[in-house]
Image 1 (cartoon, rainbow, N blue to C red):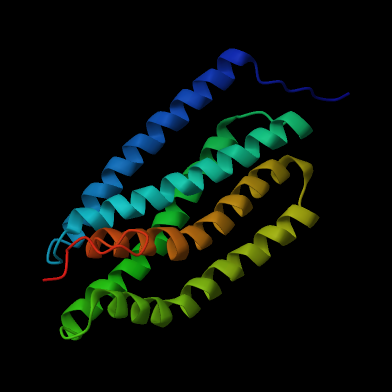
Image 2 (cartoon, one colour):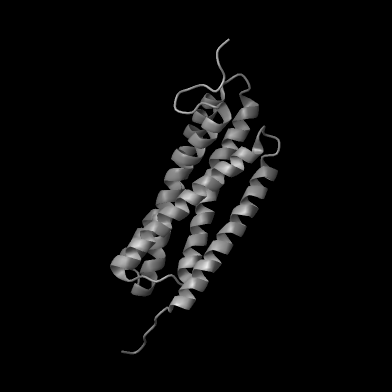
Length: 195
């Protein structure tokens, strides 16, 4: 045996604490950035909160699957895991912001349309770009996972799971959450009573 590495409980705890702090700080800066970038849109805070909610979904999916892999395959949280997790945060928020930016543009262009119609149009206009970008990265990650070295597999697997989750959540979590919050329509019941 040429080399043996093991992550002790104190190092694992340090990585977990660093990951929590890094993600919290990143979420705060992302929220501030989105509020600033979308300041001309009514309820800009909602855009930021919805993007953070989708990001938290991606983190939970990634950490959950990593936890299962740690039990089944003996993976350990280390600095590469933290790096992969922060990369997942970036991918998740970037894809959500692309859709939200198109919604912002279409709100000013199509003033007579309902918010739901504007959001649907914005999704249709950006979905091909989002899927093309994400699929391109997914193909590369799958190739690295299958053909790359053993030292990279854990890092690439975490990135792949996070990227898949981020692609899903930006379209199916962040945007519907924004629509429900903006319109007040929860499970088909309008917030305002008809007069």
